[in-house]
Amino acid sequence: MDQKMDQHKVSRVSPGDSEPVARDFIDAIGGRFGRFAQVGTQRFWTPLRVLIATSLAFLAVGFLTKANCIQGTRSAEGLVSLNWSGNRQYTSACYNDIVPLYGGRGINAPGFPYAFSWQEGDLTRYMEYPVLGGIFQWVCGMVTRFLYPVVDAIPFHTLPESGFYFIVTALTLSFFWVMVIRMMVELTENRVWDTVLVAASPLVAVHAFTNWDTPAIAAVVAAMLAVKRGNPLLAGLLIGSGTAFKLWPLYLLGAYLVLAIKNKTFKPFIVMAATAAVTWLVVNIPVMIAYPEAWNEFLRLNRERGAEWTTIYQVIDRNLPVDLADPVALNVLSFALFGGACLAILVLGLKAQRTPRVAELAFLIVAAFLLFNKVWSPQYSLWLVPLAVLAFPQWKVLFPWMVVDAMVWPILMWHMLGAENNGLPHGMLDLIVISRDAFIVVMIVGVVRQMMGRCADPVLDAHAGRDPLAGPFAVRVGVEKRLRK
Image (tube, rainbow, N blue to C red; front, side, top):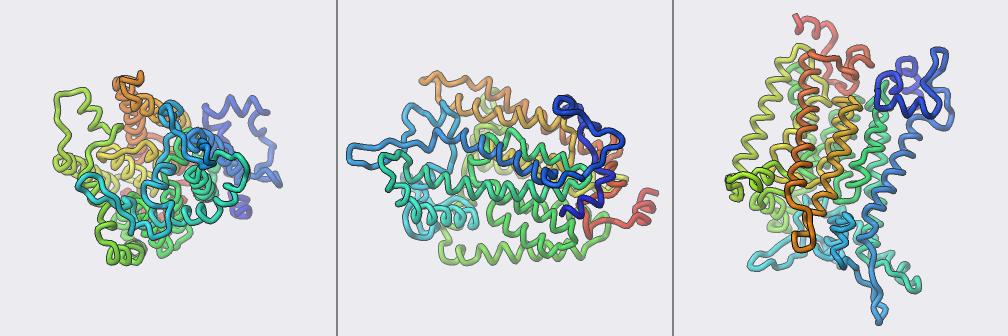
């Protein structure tokens, strides 16, 4: 890695020269590089180590933002139970799915998670996460049950078992996020310092441990790195695994499909897509056969649920005389909008004079999915962080977006307290949701302008006009010139 970075040290872009957001900070700690300074001579504090240290600091903040929800109380009998009294999950904005689902999905007991069920009225419920997501929770649960007796032996402690499960899960999720930073350093190449927007993102401080999203993000970033290194087979394996964890990594194939059609590089795409399909089937078929109803729970829940609190559909429903409560109609609307957006991205990618970059296409697809999907759990915004940094490294836009997006969470928590507990009226929630969506639309417009040649592309400028992520999907320079003619 260090050798690879040394190859590009002459052309590495300093944020002090290109980013007004970073310039004042850099001036405060010593100033920008002089014209005789040498880049890449620091032996220990390399960009990679600085960025990993930064990510660990923000992951620590992310843990602290959730810490108030892992506390417990000790009864007179010496039993420790979780303490969420006084609506602390909302007043502290520390709510996360990890703690309540430990017992709620049977992770706290022996047995395979997809064999566990419970009743909600007349409905039998099962684990609602895709297979690798459920297995990930199950493995963390086994580690928790094995180690918790050691914790329980400490006199007078007040850490409940579900709280310790959160700690085990958070440590594991942190590993995946650090791996994301490590891979982003290679993906950004000459713009290595763009990775600081991933490592120091306010969204990490708020949502690193809200749910189990970082392994799927790591799978997507790793797949892009595999393609960059010329290995579509490994990329397909990672995309299939990521899709078995969360659905959205599947959309990465759409970005490479556009490039395959435009540049007539079909072989790597076929290898990648076939490997992804086989990987997904190998992971899913055993659970599909052994526990068909449990396996279908993810699909059933997404089919039957209504719009989530922070979607544009809920904003419309809360403010206009429009009934968007019917899940069937909402499904049709959201699928139609997303399908139309994907078609538009395909046409745009094929019609663009220059070949679009992988990250640009991937960002547009995932951003369209989030904008038009009926579910946008606030932690989903983490999906966009690496893609946005790779696609549109404009710090003056990305950092304010992340701040506004992170603010959705405390405002949502305050609103969910309810009017009886002095909760925030929905107007403020609607305003912050619209502001977040507006920032994402601005980034979409910026990416489209880049693709159409209406504005400079910082990534292409830093890499002599080439897409550093294209790998075998890149078109040869001579072919590119003929295509432009």
